Each structure stands twice: as C-alpha cells, then as structure tokens.
Length: 548
Image (cartoon, rainbow, N blue to C red; front, top):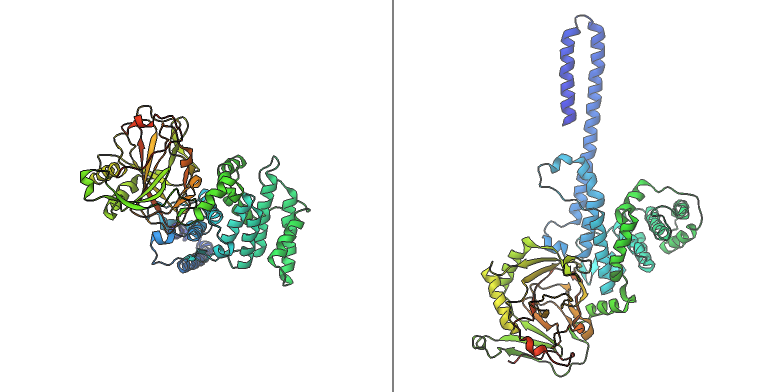
C-alpha cells in the first residue's frame, strides 16, 4: 500500500511539473516523461509479481498448516500430546516468523501475538526427553507420533526428529542422539535434507567437544572441517544411490578427525543458535539444574523414582496386614449419617485415600477461582523464603479463606475428614501440572517451620482431575504409587509422634504423560492438633489410625 501511494503521488507531481515546463521544452520534457511512465509501469508490474509470490507463499503455508492441524480439535485435546506441542512450537519458531514479516499488517488489528523463542523450544524438547526416559518410550514409536498408543494429531517431520537428536547430543546422551538421528534420516521428507541434517548433528558434536576447552561455539576447527568433508562425501553417496543412515554416521565420526576450517551456512548457524543459545555460562548453569533430571536410571535415586512412575497402582512392599476399605466418622454425630469412605494404602506410617471427597460442582468452582491467579510454582528455601525451582514444573494459586463459601465449605470438610484442626493450617494451594509437569522427590515438613504454629504435621492432597497417563504420586521408600483419581483425597502424616520430621515420607509427582493434573493441597500444622501426644521417647513412633 505504501508503494502504491508513493507511485500515485509521484505521478501527480510529474503532471504538475509538465504543465509548468512543457511549453518551453515540449519534446525534451515529453521524452523524459515517457520514460518515467514506462519505469513506473515496470516497477508496478514488479511490485504486483512480488505480491503474487508473497500471496502464493502465504497460501501454501496456510494449506500446509491446515492439513496438519485438524480444526475440530479443541485446545485441551491438542495440548494433551507431547509431539503436538513440539510441532506447534517448532512451527512458531522456525516457520511462522517468515509469514509474519510478509504479512506484518495482518497482525495490527489482532490482539498482541506472543512469539516463542529458543527458551520455549528447549523446554519443550527437555519435556519430551524427560517423558521418554521416565516412561521408557520407544524412539521409533515417538518418531511416528505415538505415545502409549495415543496418536499425535500432526505430521512429524525430519526437522522435528533432528531437534530431538541435537538436544540429546547437548546433554551428552550419544546413544539416544543416534537413535533419533537415524529416525530423522529415515524420514527424509521435504522439511530437511539428509546432508543438512547430519551437518547440524556434527555442529552439536562440535559444541560438546568445544565445551571441554575455554571456547564456546565454533572453536573446534576439526569439527567444522569435518562438516565440509561430510557435505562432499554425502553428496557423492546420494549421487551414487548410497547413504544408509548408519554408514553416514560412521563416516561422520571419521571425517571429524581432519579438515581445514569450515564456515557453517546461515541456516545451520541460526538453527543451532535457536536450539542451544550462544551463552556458555548460561548453558552450563541450565545443565546443572537439569543434571538430576537427565541422569535417567544411572542414578539410583532417579532410577527408583522413574521405575515407581511406571508401576501400577498400589504398593510393591509386603503390607503389615490385610488392608481394607471402610467408613469413618470419628464418633462425631454429624458424620454418622454421612461417613467418609476411606481406602487404606498403608498403616505404619499411615497413608489413606478418601473417595468422593469433593463434588464436580465444587471442583469447577475451585478451577474458576484459581485459574486467573495461577503463577509459576515456588518452593520454600532453607532461609524460609519462596523461589521458583527447576524441581517443580507447575503453576500454583492460593485460595484465601473467607472469599468463597464453596472454598470455606471444602476447608471445613478437610477438618472433618482428617480429624485435625484447620485454624493453624496453611491456605489451600491449587496446583496445575501441564504436559510433562512433575514435582521431584521432597518432604513436606520444613527445616525452618513457623515458631508459633509448628511444623507441617500432615498433608491432604485432593485430586481435582483425571489424568490420562502419568501424574502418579509416589513414595519411593514405601514402594507406593497412587494414580490421580478425580474427587479423591490422599492423606498422610509428615512427622513422628515426637514432632521430628519423618524422612521416609519423601514423595514425588510423576511427569504428566498425557492430559493435565490439578490438585488441591492443604498442610496442617502442629498447633491445636494435640501436640502433647508427640512428646514420647521413641522417635520412630508414628501416628496411629484414627478412631472410627
């Protein structure tokens, strides 16, 4: 539009100029103006052709995306699947920016658009890697968009598989990196050529090697030289009809050992920088934060956690005696007509599951109040302050007592079901775990507890949603795995009877493999909960079952 306006304005100026001078120099001026008009026509034709190419590009992009994203899907259906999420972010990081540059005027009448970057892409890749390692998902199935039989709603491309391969290389898991690289080569679609694919993988190897020295990126001449030779060698193989993936990878390793300095293409550099970032100290710090999570089954504690996330419901330990389901009313008159239905998971230490604790209508009210207030979850540090943590990937909102009759009713029921006083308890915390959301092993009692209210004596965790796959609450020391059950409430004590913390209560929330997990947590404190009964000599003595 600006170009057309400029052309029209220029033409008017020329016409005015013509009226002023044409009488003095008719032939010379007319000859000049004839040429000017021809140039205007040529420029206009060029501009129209350029816009036609832009329109064709936009139509092609629209068609491609429309074919891969079924319009009938709602947001929750689409975001339930890790492969859907990766493809979504990859398109927004790599493909849509070019559309945005061409159609900049299209976004002016729309609400502000949020464009993800390398941070979001890396988080998505790490989530998928975490899920694969925790649940031992097969690379071949994931490459086809399958997660435990659940098919993704998008077409997985070679570039998607490459991104995962490169990220595995960054965390120095060569075995898995090669698995994903082979799948990417086998895909061999229009999204990326096998030569560029392997070239990018070598760049990731360069980064791994250069980290050992003082340099950051692109400091290992042998790596870049290897890429140059690799390009020539692979092109020869393609021309000769060869190029099996494993042979190419073997050639890659050999070619890395010698060659002059190689300058990667602009595409290679941009792609690699988007994937990894360019700040080594930042990357190193991030790796330290992810180290615990990414060690997989090599670390005994992590291996135990991961294996517990894969087991079925129940305990892998021999119970003290036959566990039962029963009704409890604590000899309270108002509960005798409507007692709580409780399932015993463990008696020493005590772990109970109360069924049908909360109704769907109450859950909807909790969601309505909590959703606008959700913020990145924080944990309490040793000095008593809260801060975000890599060990907990979720969002949390606090429901303040007195602001909702429904929330107040739930709080009173929490007191009834646990037979504990809530006047010194913390406000209810609503937490949402999205895809890959988890809470690493931890205990609920505090090193720096409230002097007046005491430590967290017990925890009540209310499940506000069903989770399609994953999201179990696991107690590694007890071999206990509890899947989320909408409307149920899980209860356990955190302290010994003498008030000291019970470290065997260490528990964790497994990564959500599919769907969304919502929980409502209530932490009860010692004050007003019969503290005199804790003063016993035996530190190992635990709380016994409530009298019914």
